[in-house]
Amino acid sequence: MTQIIAVHSFRGGTGKSNLTANLAASLGLQGKRVAVFDTDLASPGVHVLFGYTHEGESLCLNDFLQEDAAIKDCVHEVTPAPVKAAKGHVFLAPASMDSDRIARLLREGYQVEKLNDAIFALADALSLDYVIVDTHPGINEETLLSAAIADYLVMVMRPDSQDYLGTAVAIEVAQRLDVANIQLVMNKLPSQFSRDEVRLRMQESYEVSIGSILPLSEDLLTLASGGLAVLEFPNHTWSTAVRELAQALLEASPSA
Amino acid sequence: MTEGSFPNLEALPRGPLTMALMVQLEPPPLRRLLKKGLRRGLSTAELRQCLDADWGLALESESASSLLKALQDRRWFISSADADVWKTHLGS
Ligand SMILES: Nc1ncnc2c1ncn2[C@@H]1O[C@H](COP(=O)(O)OP(=O)(O)OP(=O)(O)O)[C@@H](O)[C@H]1O
Ligand SMILES: [Mg+2]
Picture 1 (cartoon, rainbow over the protein chains, first blue to last red):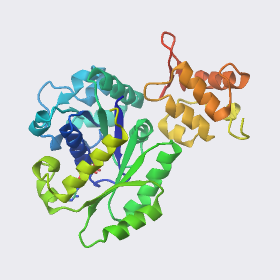
Picture 2 (cartoon, rainbow over the protein chains, first blue to last red):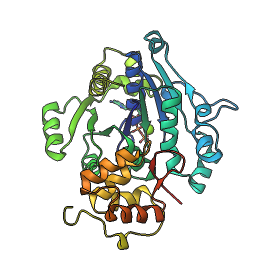
Picture 3 (cartoon, rainbow over the protein chains, first blue to last red):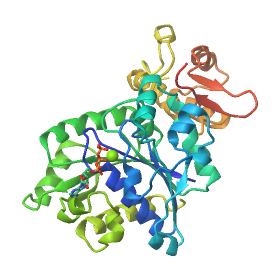
């Protein structure tokens, strides 16, 4: 059965898209079939991490949501070479980067239920093990839906007071929707912070499990979303921790 | 049935279901039912189990029928004519 992982944060810039893409690659390295949905339709970006560029006629998620294109025609294989070597596959449902189309989508809206149907239709069509949903920050119809349909909700935050407060709101909403498995991920932890103190504060602030604590990384900043850290710097602390998170998700869902 | 766990059907809003509305609906078992109806929807057997687990209701009971009718009337939770599936419907 396909497992759905939603990656969300209350505030922007926490590292959702980098985490989504690197989790997808990590699961792919374990031979899994993974699709990434870019539901951040107002400010898409996760395609950049896979080096995907929108070309001519190629369709994207907007074509499915607004034009009734078939979802399988809006998805593109972006499997990196090392993942292919490990017999994994990564597919991407990118969102349009055309300003007119973004404006049109915001103006006209779309039926969010279509997003639900697309995810499960694609899961069957491509025999996916995992779907990872990259989201827009904050609370809106898409992010609520993504959380509601997720088997795992990965909530990303930084060690910032605004993030601590906002994450509490996002978790409260997810709990109202009975999201079974919320994994909290702290990202961009500066080296001068004590991991133990941060872990304690996270535990005291929220009654959810802590998925990972990821360092602020000069290398990630330099990579600047120009590639996948788990492939570019496999031995980096950040990459190791993301692979461990992927492993934990794998072990929690052995049938996927 | 636990006191207060069954929705006041008269008081349910009339408009289309949105995720924002779902988050605010009370009581929690109603949210739970509508949430479970997302994804691939529920088979009749799963619906039966859900009604029983949350409300101790049989699918054929009067309370369950009136609940399902109230949700169907609003087009929030729809049974498919040609497949054994109950699905939550968002939007108009
Ligand atoms: N651990 C880290 N250390 C340093 N830089 C990071 C780290 N994680 C992410 N970044 C950088 O932070 C920026 C934002 O990352 P990303 O786009 O993944 O966040 P996001 O949550 O998806 O943002 P948005 O809310 O805008 O979608 C990028 O420049 C990325 O390279
Ligand atoms: Mg992003």
